[in-house]
Picture 1 (tube, protein in one colour):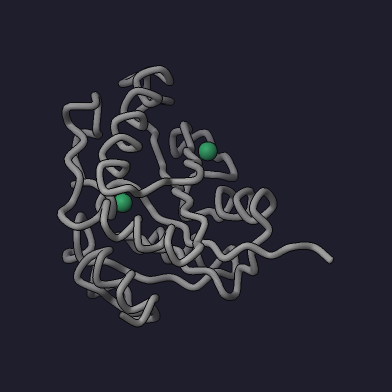
Picture 2 (picture 1 turned 45 degrees about the vertical axis):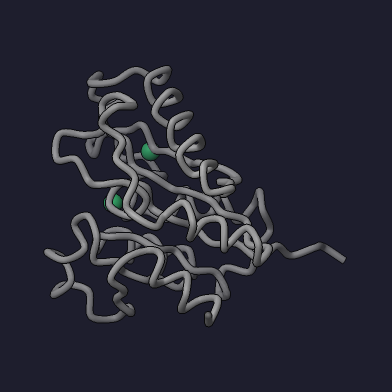
Amino acid sequence: MTSVNRAIILDRDGVLNENCSTYVQNPDQLKIITGVPQAIFKLNQANYKVLVATNQACIGKGIISPDTLTNIHKKLYTEIGKAGGKIDAIYHCPHKNEDNCNCRKPKPGMLIEAQKQWSFNPEQTWFVGDTPRDMQAAKGANCKGALVLTGLGAESANEVTDNPHFNNLPEFVDFLLKV
Ligand SMILES: [Mg+2]
Ligand SMILES: [Zn+2]
């Protein structure tokens, strides 16, 4: 029997850290949203695999290097770790829109890849994002989508009518864990 993990997938910018209109280009520009590390810790405690799926066209555009992205993610791990929290994996799409890859959201490629690696049941798995394209990616992967109003969420809330809205990731996590 294949073991099935309990998992949650999170967008990065606007969900874990403040959205940056000109991309997060170095670790100093990564500003973690209040309460997020503690929320991740709660997910870990409840036995959720915590996965991140993020579009980073800034790599394809040559604005940052893959090494810089690695350093930005080291800071993300460190900041989450300050509350005892752990991210299990980060998937990123480095491509530009014109590259027409299968991973750039709204396409579901990263979520499908995550499902293959972590063998969760997509229909029981939430993808939390702050844009309509996150909700489209969730739908394309047969996952449940939830919109948070941090990042670009507040300005895209009107366009997202098929998914529940939460003020921020900590509120979503409390809903999920029913605390
Ligand atoms: Mg986002
Ligand atoms: Zn891609």
